[in-house]
Each structure stands twice: as C-alpha cells, then as structure tokens.
Length: 249
Image (cartoon, rainbow, N blue to C red; front, side, top):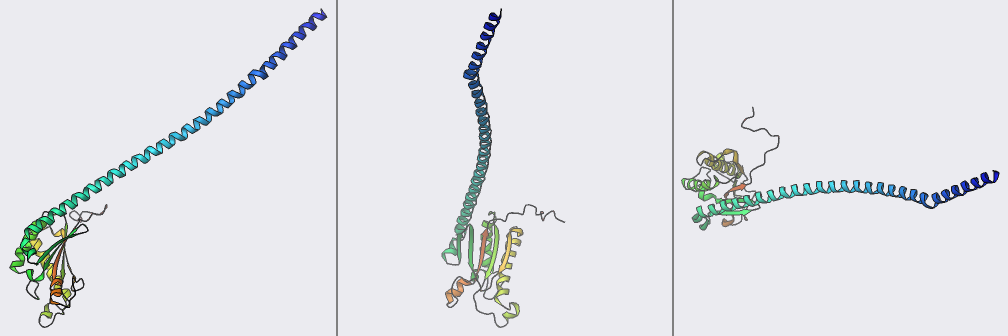
C-alpha cells in the first residue's frame, strides 16, 4: 500500500513538473507575446489618433488656402475689371477731346490705376480770371459726359505758375492760392450744377504754384504749369461701421 502511494505521489510530481515545464516553455512566452502585442496595439492607436489629428489640420489648412485663393482670384478679377473700365474711359476721352489733344490744350494720361486729364488754363479761363469761359464750359460738358459713366472719384486741382498776383487783381486773389482754389471750385460747381455729376464724388483743391510740371523760367514752362488737373481715382471703400450719411441724424 505504501509503495502504491509512493508511486502515485511520484507520478503526480512528475506530471506537475511537466506542467510547470510546459508553462515555462510555452505559456510564459505566449503571455509575453500577448503583452507585447497589446503595447504595440496601444502605440498604433496613439499614432493613428495623431495622424487623424494631422489629417484634420491639413484639411483645415487646405480649406483656408482654397478660401484665400478664391479671394485672391476675386481681387484679381475686380482689378482687371477696373482696369478695363479705366481703359474704356480713357479711350472715350481721347475720342471726345481729339482736337484739343492734337492742339496741345489737353492731355489724357493713365498712371497707377488713375486717370489724369490736364487742361491748360487758357482753354477754360481768361488770364487772371476764375470764371469759366463759354469755350471752357463746352469742353467741360464733353469731359463730364464721359465722367458720368465712370465709377470714379473726381478730384479737381487748380495749378498756377509762380508769377505773383499784382495790381487790382490782388484785391480779388491776394495770392496764387486763392486763384487756383477759385478755379478748381468753379470747375467742380460746373460739373455738379451744369453737367449733373454726383457732388459726393467731387472735390476741389487749390495747389497754387507748388506742383509745377516744368520750370517757370520760360514762357512754355509757365504755360504748362497753369492748368486744371482732373484726376479719376478708385472709389473709396466705406468704413465697416460707418453710418450712411443719407440716413444719419
């Protein structure tokens, strides 16, 4: 009986040793592999989350770039439209004032998105006067017929030579400031009252002799400096929160 029990115990010990050996040989490595796999899966999940976030950021950046591209394209198209409009206005003025341009009395020039019309003073005014001559009014009517179709701000500038005003004329115009300003104002008033241009698009400035085109030491230079400049500039953009003058109280 004792031998039988001893044999059974021996068998149990052998089986236990075999199971322990099997665990060490097979199950323990499998457990380690499982833990490694779990860690790797966790790292992959983190990388996937990071990549998903990066993709989202890139999609957002792409959306912004597309929006900016659309805005730039709209700006380019608007600029091209304004340039085409300015070219059309210039062509109309060149056609309408062909004779005066040929005689050297008027110049039409485009520069930096603006259009400038120069009129020598003698075509508009008598010497030392600020009242428009009938011939000058006729010229301004033709100019205004073109300006009426242009979506532009119209700035009128009066210019003189550097000869001081003397004698009885100085009682009306003490200096060239007053003469140049009066001439510019009278041109603006004509464009509004007689030619029907919107006064909100008009302005008048007297610049006297301080913006000469040529040296004042010759008759030709002084003649070119005595002029009215009409500048067509792009319309001003309203302030975002600025009230409408038409409805303000």
